[in-house]
Structures are given as C-alpha cells and as structure tokens.
Image (cartoon, rainbow, N blue to C red; front, side, top):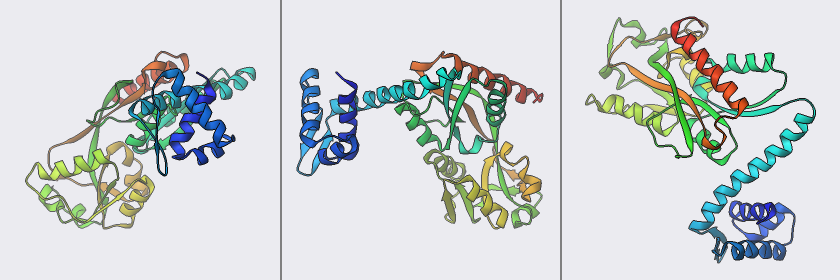
Length: 303
C-alpha cells in the first residue's frame, strides 16, 4: 500500500467521479483507475461502488477513507513541521476553539505560550462544537477547547472536563424585560430571541421552556456568528442565553445586562477534547497543563 494510492482513494470519494479525481491529483483517469484497482486487489475488498454517474464508497471503502484522511494529514504535518524543526521550531499544535470561548482563558494561554516559547508554532481555528469535533476526527485539529454538550463523541477522542460555566439570560439595558426586578420564564415565551446555531444549543433552548410546560418561542433568529448575535443584542429588542464570562466586558461596553429570571440555573461544562492517538505528546501536554492550571486559578479567583 502506497501513500499515493490513499491519496487517490480520498480524491475519488471527495470528488465523486474518477474524472474529477484524476484532475485533482494531476494524473490521467486510466492511471487513477489502475491505482485504485491495485489498492482493492491488495486489500482483497471492494472500496468503491461504480455508479452510472460516478463512484461512492462501500462500507469498507468508507473505513479506509477515514483512516487514509488521518494518514494523509500526518504526512502533511511531517512536510510542514520538518522544515520548522530545521529552523529551530520544535513543535506545532493545531487548536480548535469554540466560538463562545475564544476570549475565555484560552486566549491568555496561547498568548503566554507564544510569548514564552519561541520554538512553538500554533494554528488556531474558531468554530462551533460539531464542526470542530469533525475536524478533530479527520486529523485537521489536535485539540479542541469548547463546551461539552451531552452528545456522543467518537471513542477515539479523549474528553477531559475542566469545570462548569454559568449561562445567563441577556438583553440590552433598555429592553422591557430588563426593566423588571424579576421575570418568570413564561415572560420570555413571546420575546424576540437570538441564539447560536448549534444542534445541541437548540435542544437545550427547547428543553428550557418545554420542561416547564411552556411552548418554545417562535420569534427566533439562529446564527453561527457570535459577532452577529452580539450585534443583535446591542441594537436592542433581542434576548439571548450566553455564558456569563462572555459578557463580563460587554455589560458596560455594549450596554448589555443580565436578566433576573426566576428559573433553574443553567450550567454547561467546558473542557478539552483531543485524539487518543496523540495523547501525551509533549506540546499537547504543555498546552493541556497550562489550561488545567489556568482554569483552576480562575475557579479560585486568582486569575
């Protein structure tokens, strides 16, 4: 089995046709077909279904495809990191950060590591939980810092909780609900809402109301942009639920306030997720240790 054969298989599945796959890897279609046939012969299994308008992976082909993606990402890492080592840079870490947490502890940790360790090289991707986990599984990320919703993650990933965050109800200071000393959850049913567009976030949002026998608010805007969501709140007329840490500066600078809602406290776990196959790598462990220590200090009020 050769690296180029794995690259050809990934291209065939990604592109959906052998013609486009051949163009993507800069070889002729007959050469690509021979390469794939040789790979299937070596493994003794069919990897692709030949369809009238292209190809699709078999069940075995999908398994090989996922492993091939990881292998190819590792090969690309070698190509990227080897020259860096030659230049005196001894490590690279690709970090995924949940959109709600980019300015919470992790920004300080990355800054400190980058400032104090000139040999480190870090790439940072901001995204939403589901997308970050997918990139982690594919090998495009080494570690994710995010909330930890109650959803299943692949067994190949290590989930390490750091602690619990408080989620609060938020609106602009002149919102009608902000004028009340206290509000009941029922008062929020007819409000205009803006929330993050993540499956688990919406499920939490629905459960918040439905568990109290209240209909899910219908006047709802969902967005995957935290900046846009904050902009809606700043302009007025919207209510949202957000981690309290996110608003520590926005309360004053954006004119936002926490609503006093008579409802059960909402909490969410935060933590680290990383691939089991790279657990213990020195650079990864350096980052994890710094996050653990910083979170512990934050919880004790020392940070």
